[in-house]
Length: 299
Image 1 (spheres, rainbow, N blue to C red):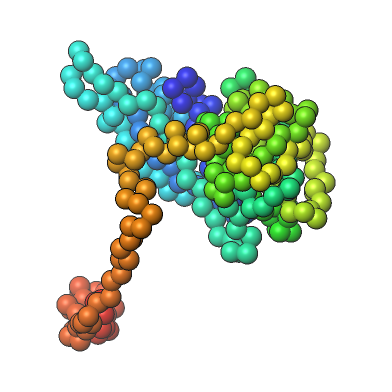
Image 2 (image 1 turned 30 degrees about the vertical axis):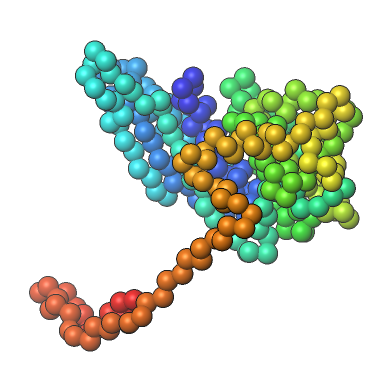
């Protein structure tokens, strides 16, 4: 977003819909809501150009992917202090994607078991601004949705800013299951931005769906018992990475108990008394149909 507001906003939409598909939903049912935050515009053309480019990028993504934005909020007041020492927020457009789907299709991103195949499904063509080819992206969505519909996808993750390496790491952390990468995997590709790609853990008897031209399906590796990422030339201990990752927030969010014997307090709430209002509501305004008496139940 800081380097290219058009491409950044476009990719925000791509990533939000890809996350929805990774969770087991269908992209054709997706709707969007946007949150935008930009510096105070004043009378400078360059400042006006940033939100303009972002809105156009988001609109182009909606047209390409067939998903409409039905809500949102914008703020053009992200500037603080006086002009001499002004602080400005970076150009920001956040895309939220929502859909209704069947709970039986829901998929989470953590690896589920051992000796399972892990594959990457991705559009074959990306531009210099990291935007995937739209038709190839839609075909990749279809391929992942076919796997989730058949129950053949045990875990699905879609790489974001942290690229495929981050996705693999987090997929391992959930159940502390490691992965041994395939011999011909290009490790450098795990550190390249591939928005709209997917990493999928397949069920043992899963068959890969037929994919359209322009969609790449490549083996990444196999899940293993050791809590490691084995690249063939290097074995990375994930317990050390997990500690480095989680400990950074411990000062704000204490996620560890005081000790193995420490008891965790059960928090529960139930109202002792239920109060019921049985009176009449205020008379309706003149000209409006009469509002019937209602009971308001307060818990």
